[in-house]
Length: 219
Image (tube, rainbow, N blue to C red):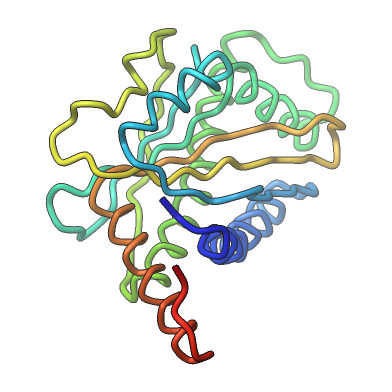
């Protein structure tokens, strides 16, 4: 749906705001945190099912944080942040290790911390994505504090096909690295429908304008 130049521009924009989110999280947790967006993409809704079939194994049984946009027009679907299976627990354990050294938490305590950590992370990261989206579209897009749920292992949860008004999916695969962990975590941010389509049209306008300024129009 997007050209390579458009994907690069979108990735650069969101990485700017996501790095700011990483700095905020690092300061609040007093630990080094790296957040990096490998690529940003807008795909048509019919191709989302194919993407999920290809990558769905890692997304089954995940935590999902859902944040509604504030003061946004009806029909705009929320931002969703998915923590691949086991990653939410690993993030919670890394934060516990840093902030409460020597603590051996109970399973119940760890689950409570896990949910709290997901909420804090999601609120910061999704608001950063909202700011990046607003910067592209020229308006303020703030997010409400997200709700967190443990998704069941079923494909239907992530299927966009057939939903009324569905046009496109904004796809942001995010990589997280800790100072206390060698392995990187992988998260997935999505938003659907008119907002993604509006961003695609805006990118078309920007790229066409830049092309015209250089004596040609990008295909």
